[in-house]
Amino acid sequence: MSDAGIARAAPAEEHRYPCEQCGANLRYAPGQTKLVCDYCGHTQTIAPAGREKLAAMEEVDLAAGLAARIPASLVEETRATKCPSCGAKFDFDPTVHAAECPFCATPVVADTGLDRHIKPQAVLPFRLTEDAARQALTRWLGSLWFAPNGVRDYARRGRRMQGIYTPFWTFDADTASRYTGMRGDHYYETRTRRGPKGETRTERVQKTRWTPAAGRVARHFDDVVVLASRSLPRGHVDSLEPWDLSALEPYRPDYLAGFRAEGYTIELAEGHAMARERMKRVIENDVRRAIGGDVQKITSLSTDWSGETFKHILLPIWLAAYKFRGKSYRFVVNGQTGEVKGERPYSWIKIAFAIVLGAILAAGAAYLIHLQEQGGGF
Image (cartoon, rainbow, N blue to C red):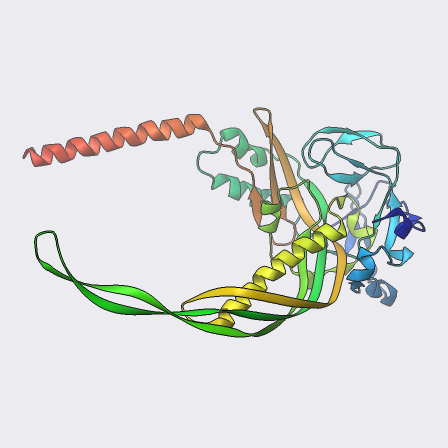
């Protein structure tokens, strides 16, 4: 966003959640609507959202957002820093000046400037606890072939995982598309030819009959989700879908108590371009279905876009960062469903052992076959 569009941005409020009984910090309890104290067990209920909070979840006009003409109430200033290694942007507590990046374990020193950005409008609260996420990660790591023992032991040893509220954009749009193309229907012809020894061979040959096609398709896109961060591998995070966005709550800091929240590093315009590419692929599939036949060719496709809106939301991800031989590997767990994805290192010792073992088994099998052919039997 341009500075002109957010000149009236208010500084973000600082929120503290001291326990009424012992004074320690409360944290949000995943899967529940309450804050808990890890020291004395005291709980505090999170009040349901009021109408004014529900209104904050309404879609925002995309054209206004791209032109930086959104209301000042939707922007804020926070003290954030950017990791020099993975590019993650996250908030710092005003009293903290140095910490470890939760995404790649790189030491980071806090910036002194303020970051102005669009505020999150909604949050999907964590449903999985850290223990449940670790169990899901342990099962996933245990299923990996040729993974080093150190990686498999990572989760088993109870290494702490980071609960991260990760930034996403969602986009809505109404589309009307006109297309032209060709429909291909397969048919078969029987051919007779002579083989190398003069014998007659009959074979069926597939051919395609092409006919022109043209028409219109329309589709409404609702909540196309786009990752707004560069700190995590997009392929892994995209694989965590689907998210049940019906469980979204109006943004409130109570759900973030005890967790980290990352700021977006992919701006609205870039996120919108990514969303359109995803929508275009869906539209192309709609066109192919409309053309029908066995195969299709699309020669022209023109789409009118209308009713485009967006939201900035936070989705829950459990993150484990592990360094193996100087390289960082990251594992992500969907904090709502428990789906796991990650980067996997390979143990070349295990691979080499498997190759040698395979060669030995193959040689043994060949020897037994040789014995059978020689009449040795078993």
